[in-house]
Length: 169
Length: 339
Image (tube, rainbow over all chains, first blue to last red; front, side):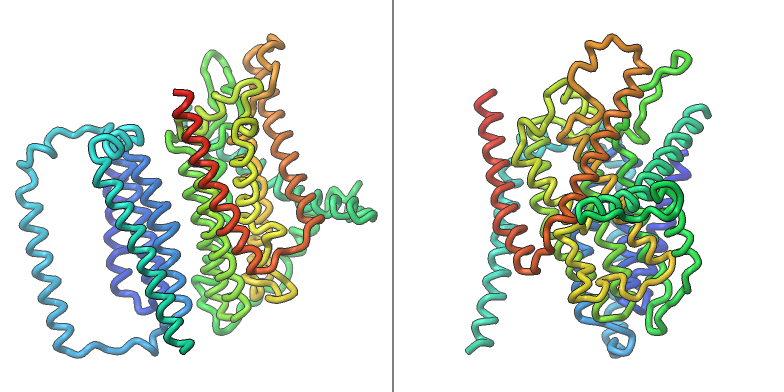
């Protein structure tokens, strides 16, 4: 049962990821990406990490993708506005993508013998275990990361403000 | 097999009950408006207008189906479908009553006992924006787009305060499972007594999330014609309008579950009832609370005028958000002092 679910979800995930790249209209790409995120959340549930699955949906589908949606809608991108890329850029993109694929295959090949992955712990994705780790063992990196986000946010506001001042002058 | 049949029955019953309640909420809304404005309200179709929702539904089905030429066809149809789907999803995690015992087997009255129930509710609430955004954008009309953008910025702004008010509740309860939260509110230990400010913030945010008055700027008729559903007609419009009533029902259920003890009622344990009778009584009590909240939603709708856009943003960002943060901090200090 679990295996069928896994294959079903993976098929949809790969399909939607491909469609996200292939689609002509930005808003269709966006919706395919959303679908892809949902299938990933399904994978988390299969790994018994319900907390991660829900947070994945809240953060990506509920917040980040809505931000993307705003951008796409307000910029009003459409097929006519899409410029065709020069041939050199296409070749470079293909080569870079191929290199990334080789690197990924190289990493994943050695994974069968990795000792940390050989001992699956199906409770690790539970909310209690994750919070225990985050707020005890990794509390300093966690707090530093949140300060980093705050800095980025303040920085973005500052940049926006200074620009409007320049425009007013 | 039996498990599957029982879950399917439960899902069907909950679906039908949500649809039925939402259907009659439309009638109740009009009757209530009539009561507040000293008139009768609908009373022609059937006794006391009881057939009015059916007549309305029939009318919407038979209306002319119109689709703008310039609309993105697929997304235009997807919009109302998504809105309806998201509206119906939340009811899966709400515990509707204590478990029923039939033939020695215990049946819980909850479709999915997720151990992250509260977060699930929150995730679905944050998905509510998609149906409106997609519908508003696909219509290819500037009023629709304005309405959709208003709706989503409103929802994003109020989700923050809502999340923070829930966080204070979770800190107190020490659990995010809705079952657990209801179980801890036995008797008079309703969360609203310990978290009055949190409840107020959550309630206001629930009003904003369901796009009810005084937060119905997305469909503000005076400025935007009909907002995000300007270009919709027939049953697609019906889906948008109907989803609002389902949302109202579901958010009332969530409010009753999180803050008003769910199916608990003081002294219910002392009556010495058999488990099944107690379960049914608990269900009735939960539904009474839900209908009470629905009436409160309607009372607010027919009493308050609509906010202006800047007032809406000021309330969300400058009043509710700091208040929710303060509530969170005070709750944290209390928990720390209590040990």
